[in-house]
Image 1 (tube, rainbow, N blue to C red):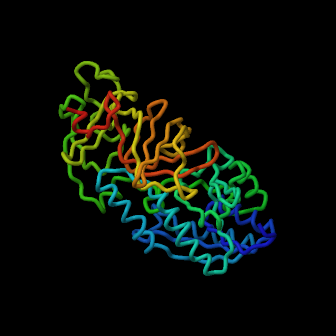
Image 2: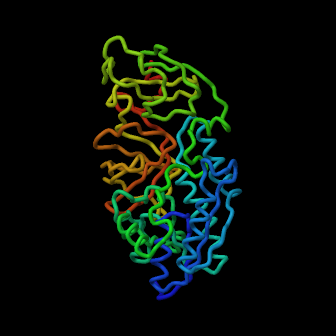
Image 3: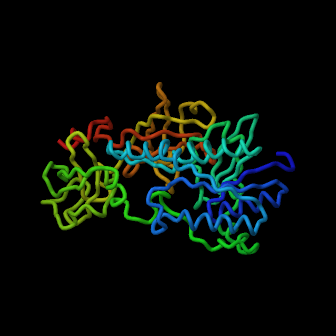
Amino acid sequence: MASKQRVVVGLSGGVDSAVSAYLLKQQGHEVVGIFMKNWEDDDDGEHCTSRQDWLDAASVADVLGIDIEHVNFAAEYKDRVFAEFLREYQAGRTPNPDILCNAEIKFKAFLDHAMRLGAEKIATGHYARVRERAGRFELLKGQDPLKDQSYFLHRLNQAQLAKTLFPVGELPKTEVRRIAAEIGLPNAKKKDSTGICFIGERPFREFLNRYIASAPGPIKDQRGRVIGEHVGLSFYTLGQRQGLGIGGVKAKGAQKGGSEHEPWFVARKDVAHNTLWAVQGHDHPWLLTPRLRAHDASWVAGEPSAPGLLGAKTRYRQADAPCAFEAHEGGGFVLRFEQPQWAVTPGQSAVLYDGEVCLGGGVIVTEAASDDGAFRPAAALAA
């Protein structure tokens, strides 16, 4: 990389992007900050912190002596991310909007805007790394295993990675905090943001209820007995234990994989019959998946890996699970795991790794297998 470049940094108001901007300036780059506002609906400060985040980002820019611009991407976010988020929930799946936000907003709308400002590179505070090897760009895990965010970045392509820097990807979070305190950043001790920006800290069901009509229906156990009522399939996710309203229900005799005293978990969502299926016991067979199928695959290198043994995450903060990978025509793939995976959820992403290299991934479309390993509809499994 040239000794000095014009780098536009996405300043979120958090400590990671702030230290990223500081490190780039220390390296001699011309640094400009951009604050992205991605959500406007009911932005009243009670749940969504965008106003405070903007003030924090502006304070950081002042301390670092860099210019900062406030850019509104709310319309793009609503069209490209939130609309898809609602479609997926209405279909009974559980999407991950942060992944789509990275692909469509932070590394597309933001990147395009930065290029119009004359940027040669963009930078964010993500815990990941980019490595150029033989003219190709690789996405690597962040050095801090507790903070690695490559899972959320797996849809980035060669053109995006070629323009992207992740300055804190080489550092542990503790070092980022230390640097922030040492140079007197006003947000050095700011708590890490959690969850989705447009939801903030508000109850998720309350938020979703504004956009998706609730359609109550039966909760059934594996024998087909009605054991409760759900408020709408969109409001539940596989593996969910809290909020089922059946905690006092006891099965007559131990279920397969559980006992009458074990907690209940969401195991299936049958949209066609508006039925939620629940089982008892964390290790019930219905919660364990020996293989999965994914579609809408995206590959960092532009093409899928060769068939073989890889590591996979079916959710964030999960250790890489050894699996056999096989790409299918039409942009999908199948994974067969050495050990069955727990509560694999349609709509979430299965992300593939070869050691520290993130290869890409796809959206999970099937989550369960019967005892013989063949995929069957949830209703058939419950019969």
